Image (cartoon, rainbow, N blue to C red; front, side):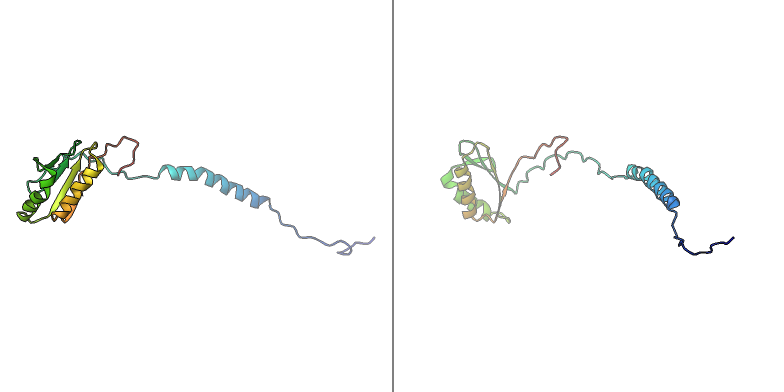
Length: 145
């Protein structure tokens, strides 16, 4: 009777991966449960809606040129012929500190006439020409300006 002590067969070490798989699966389940809870608690600060402000009233010191659909020019609510506009503007600029003109034109105004009036204003000595526009009316889904 003889016992074989470590002779022919070699012992192979093996790692039991069952506990490792159990731990990884538990961590995966924890992350799957916690992740949606974290996104639900994410808060966004939205600025409050601003009340509409009343449009600014024109100052008496402003020079406003308006061209209507027929090409007639109005300077501060006084109709001026196109050929006398430059001399009238020069007199107005001589009496004021600022040489800024605010320009408004009808949507049906001929483009060439509008550009001609702006050129006359520049030729009369206007340092800046501001274009008056209508405010945009935004819907609920439209982005803010």
